[in-house]
Length: 134
Image (tube, rainbow, N blue to C red; front, side):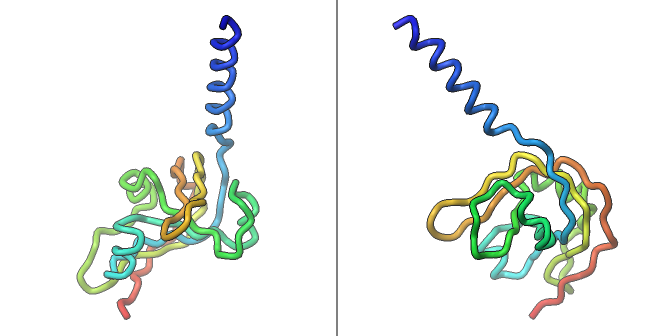
């Protein structure tokens, strides 16, 4: 019985270490879409699509679909990326950016869902462009 506590503690430490990730710098494009379909599928979230050459930097299983993720700290991400407020004459905003993320969590379940990551900081962000409604 005396071995159970140290073993449990060691397992907990390994689990915590596995969740801690080295920050990852990525170039790509953020989008904050407000069209009805996007809001139904991903909700009112800012998301990021890294450049294809950088997909290998993400700690996710090899997949046939494009790499993209939404921010788990959405309010802070919108502030750091300087996402403009929602406007009636467009369906959201997008811009190129270089960002630093951590705590990347791949979505591995069946069905609809998406990867998530915490935006740690923004190195640079371009002026946002309005996304036209279709």
